[in-house]
Image (cartoon, rainbow, N blue to C red):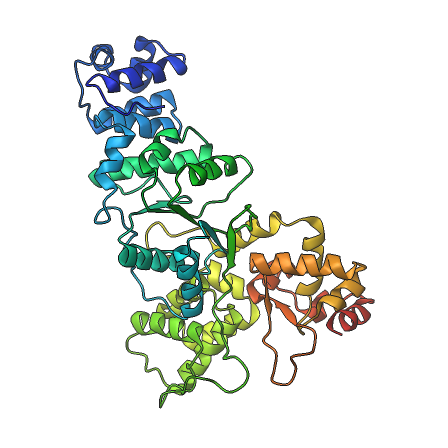
Amino acid sequence: MMNRQAPPAEFGAVLRSARRKAGLTQEQLAGLSTVSVRAIRDLERGRVVRPRKDTIRLLADAMRLSDTHRAALELAADSSSVCNALRDVYSPELACPPTPVHTMFGRESELRALVELLGSERERLVTVVGLPGVGKSRLAQEAALQVHAWGDIPVLWLPMDRGEGTPGEASHRPQNALASWVRSLMSEGGNYEELASFIEDRATLLVLDGHEMSPATTPALLYLLQSCRRLKVLVTTRRPHHFSGGRLLPLAPLPTAPAPGPSTVPALPGDSLTAHRPAIELMLSYVSHMRPDLLLTDSVTAAVGEICAALDGIPQALEAATAWLLLYSLDQLLAMARTRPLALVDGSPSLSPGSSAPLGDLLDAVLAELPVRQGDLLAAAASLDSPWTVDGVARALGFSPVQAAQDVHALLLHGLIRQLPADPGEAGRPGRFTVLHLVRDLVTGGRTADESATPAAPHLLATITA
């Protein structure tokens, strides 16, 4: 545990402890790091209290320090205890969410629900769960901004699934070193007492963006919540994790079609093809920036609508597909989206540095984590072009209705399937579901229901869709 008061020789003590834990002598560390023995000796004795950042990096690399111990060394080099670093960033002016780059489309109801949960005195842990690329981080960012602005509450934003922070000198600022340390604690587990003792009863929002919770990290998070009575935690994750006392908010892909029945919001003149269809509005914004020469006519909007439907309204997929407009026409994109939507998305050129892994790889990782029974149900449903019901898959696969309902519920939480809205007058009929096109493409390898059919398939398909 790092000391709350940082004496001048703190870096030397931290360095000496790390070297000994690595089983290295000063001479061995010098040979591995290219830092001279004399410099290492002076650092450990406290004769040099402000080492260069390059020196710290060389020493940390040579000792193969974990992220946690590397961040501790950086904080010690700044003569900052965790307590001092927290004071540097704890004010609402400094501790705030990142500034949005893009406008958020079509998440009004989800945003309202999330802000209400974070504003409630009863809810202190909220988890937003959904597929990769569906917009979890963007929703969390918007909610955190509102909480930050309305309540003047510090927000500690930790990107758990990204690199170690900002490149260049900015990465060495105390708030970034602190964020690296807390992020490492959440990933690796560690001692939270100092963090908890400083926050105490101060109102704080901790955002763990892209945090895949596990039984190993849950007790530490529970300790923080129990020790800091006014701390709230917002987690975004692709894996549903039921935490005692926490609330789960599933985030589905953007709607690609308006809800059935009369709309409560009148459409504006000329927007009949986009009204209440946020996925189309989002992709049209990408199109207008990628191809400003392309007039957004009704035919263009209709083609974009079909592409959005084929790509399930997943924002990352829509942005990836739009990148091809520099090379292909919109009609060519539509033809690719109809046949192999995943190939269209995964093969697209990157438009931004540090972009995430291909969506197909991310979806494949989600599928690999499914229990066998859920995987079997998804594979059977993925071969269908028609909507299906819970009772239908239960009969076809020999599951009990309760088992099938549990598995369908789990697949909905993961975001792998979509429930179709009921038409007017069909409120009493069983719910109908469909597998996302991108997921179907991944599971079936691009084969259609007819191509995947076996001699017994017609009976199976009729049973599931009944």
